[in-house]
Length: 337
Ligand SMILES: *[C@@H]1O[C@H](CO)[C@@H](O)[C@H](O)[C@H]1NC(C)=O
Ligand SMILES: *[C@@H]1O[C@H](CO)[C@@H](O)[C@H](O)[C@H]1NC(C)=O
Ligand SMILES: *[C@@H]1O[C@H](CO)[C@@H](O)[C@H](O)[C@H]1NC(C)=O
Ligand SMILES: *[C@@H]1O[C@H](CO)[C@@H](O)[C@H](O)[C@H]1NC(C)=O
Ligand SMILES: *[C@@H]1O[C@H](CO)[C@@H](O)[C@H](O)[C@H]1NC(C)=O
Ligand SMILES: *[C@@H]1O[C@H](CO)[C@@H](O)[C@H](O)[C@H]1NC(C)=O
Image (tube, rainbow, N blue to C red; front, side, top):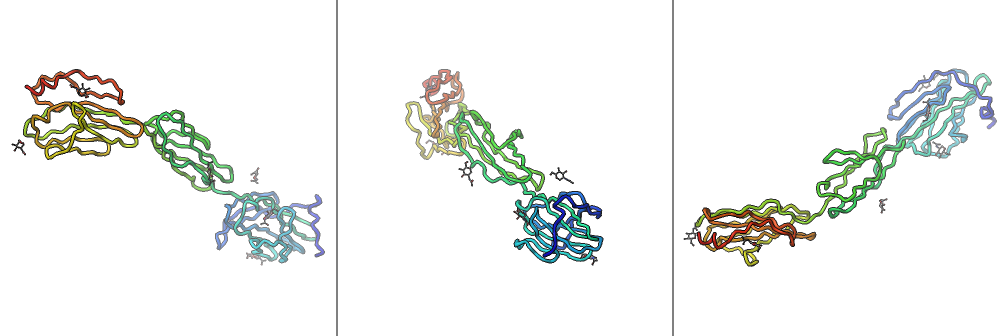
């Protein structure tokens, strides 16, 4: 090889070809032609790119270089990389192709040739982009109300992607890989979405579900009138995470038992006492007890005979030790009237 690359010694001249970019190629590979300025060719990691060198003069020697390493001199391949190949070599076009472009391929490439005994070069700068992608993110979380919650979302990409957390219910956005929620409240239990984007491909997103546990709160309690021989229902509704389990008690804290005139029906957020045929013995003071592993709550309510002197309201006793807002109502009055 008698050929020398004197263009590295400041004696290079600029080529005259006009500059143009084109997306082309039967393989869908990206192709670019370039002239005297170092142009940027942008390609996605994993795709193919064609580096075109237009020659419109009589050329005696020509070469392609990656930084200062020779890839090709004429049809002679110097590079050991099987991804690099010559796609065109004639009097007007000397082009190479790089397949499955890697991030390491980013950098300056040079087409160097001798025409009329003058060394000439053309430069191109290959930019390799990588779509933004989430590589690690918090697992779904189950925490107790009042805990601090920290979520993370790690993303990669070229150029450096942005990372945003979106709160699904309220649509609030928070920039950055880390989302901190101090003393989380039950209404903050929801899905949080991490969104990463660098404009190269559609954003990558991932959701994290945060469950906030709290002890039962009985929400709705009503004293119910009932007529002998008819049906009646007492309801006890409780909000809780995890869902509450329910128990029913009578005046003296005897557990209420199902029989052929009384059924207990437990549903997800409530429990029902179903009286199928009300008799005297059913009138009285019932206590609903709702509990989960974080605590318990109870409430009292009356099944009373209509027309009874009724001066009371059902009472929510709050947490186990809670103080009821009970306005006293004598059962004996109810039972006798
Ligand atoms: C090539 O990219 C660099 C940085 O990415 C930029 O500074 C330069 O202006 C670009 N050149 C051209 C010709 O677009
Ligand atoms: C060189 O090859 C290109 C692409 O195949 C073609 O368009 C062009 O006409 C050829 N030029 C010469 C001088 O053969
Ligand atoms: C270009 O050179 C860099 C650094 O030497 C190397 O890592 C990369 O694989 C080369 N790419 C090609 C297509 O030759
Ligand atoms: C994700 O991050 C967690 C916490 O930093 C770490 O324990 C785990 O090994 C990471 N997983 C992967 C696949 O990198
Ligand atoms: C309800 O119970 C009473 C007394 O036990 C009985 O006489 C009556 O037939 C029952 N009514 C129904 C609808 O079962
Ligand atoms: C109903 O029972 C509860 C619990 O046993 C008690 O605290 C409350 O005073 C009772 N209400 C009436 C009207 O007797």
